[in-house]
Length: 446
Image 1: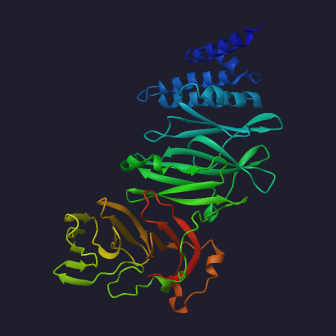
Image 2: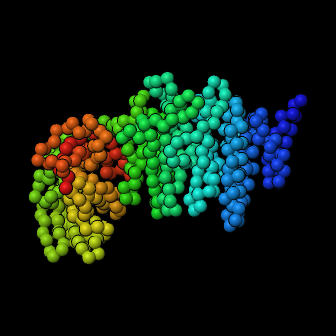
């Protein structure tokens, strides 16, 4: 009696291997309505055989599409044969013993599991298929996820104010031959299925972080950082060669942009005029100011209190800028910016440049003289310096936000008014946290 479960599992495994044969009776027996798995290992072994069969189909064969569709249908039916919560929970245990050609993730409460695999039907692109298994009234029912599929590897269960829990599905995918992404999708349980839940900013149910094949050097940094209970998400963004993170906290209903650092100085900054330069050098407010500025041809020459001399030469034909730094305390240094840029600030070892662009969306470039490297590049509308922080304004879409549109605005702006969120980040950190200051103003947009 002790050997019967193993004999049954082995028999079923051999049946799946036999799928490569033309024995239709065996396939009919395997997918009979009354068939179900006894344990999670049987499911894993069965899918390994089917995925191996899928990967072995020759794409140059004239019957490739027909064969791939058939095997994918077998995979779907195999997953849907998981009928009990016990088998569902056992799948994760067997899954981690070795690598597979599919991914599986299960929620902490063991109520939802999801399988993802490449169907091979997407030609040059990966075409993912997802099947979620959802536990309802002590039985497991299959359901499909709406939205763009991904290869999911984690499920987070959020504690909410309501009775129904929210689930975050984390995964990755391929957007094109050169572009990849990580994504997080939010779902809530409805009846015997899952429904998208708009809990992210701007009433979204999904967030994605895109990166190209050129950015593979910091691929891991482009993934979302999610606390185990899902209460905090750090969303990555590539600013030049630097990855920054925007924090979002879950309040029981939705995710809010919330401060993580209490030492941020937000005083005297809330309106458009607060960003206007108050010096003759057109430097950012809060910057160290030069003693003098001279111009020789296309070169601007700045001299500072610390005996530093900075020469900025624009080359309009090549659309770049050469910067040379001279000081009695350091060796001379020369570097290039891939834009026609102007020096707009200095704070200790950091230099700040503005590149070419519209007044509401120009690039701020930061360079570290000590490490001799570009820190980051970020498009913005306004900026100022506070100690080791940059406060900046970013144009936002106000069409779906009535609260923003109620902000007082200069009547002279007419149709050229725009709404700007104020953010802050520490420019001296390798991967800074970018935080919303809860301040919004109305300004002029060209």
